[in-house]
Length: 286
Image: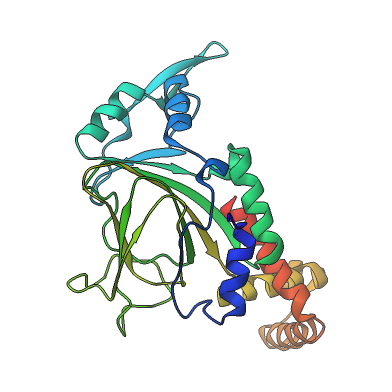
């Protein structure tokens, strides 16, 4: 039975796995509810999307977009960056992965899924598709500075996780020791996989067939984001201090800022503080 994504993530949180352990659901989603290769083919053929809403990757390398995009006439002006379907297909035959970004901007079913997730999970959600030829991978072993939910749409993909002590950190990066996976998981169509924030991984299409998977990244506010929310409130509430600080001595300025910050923090409800930070990172992700 197909489950909605908010329910899947709710299961992760209620089980205490959020941020702590991966979770695999077999046959949990209906691929027909999302995007498929046929739909992407039509999109490319019509050349309706522009770079960087799509790009080509091959084992961590990014070919020059000029090699797979084309200019089109848009209201009498030549605009570059549109998909050249023939060139993209040729690169994919040579082993390249097609990556589509921010589907929620232009794909209604994905946008509805994002909206449902953001109603129950305090995170900014971004969406990506990876369409990978048989036996290939688009990205090198890496960490995302976010939680990850991957849905297998077509074909099979082998995920290797590198969750040994010392490999999981808060920042994104490629500094992953990939000599020995901690877990190996093969996703079939309809399977869903949750990875906690910062868990290193890579994913290879299993030999014999292309793989298409849809990824949701869920980014929670960082300490920096929370501090930025305080500063926005500080600037809004203390206009004279912000805009006429030059009229004060350095000693007066430092004392007033310290007092004002304490007042802002003391008067900030924790839920409102989080919501302010969350609102800003969702704007940035969108």
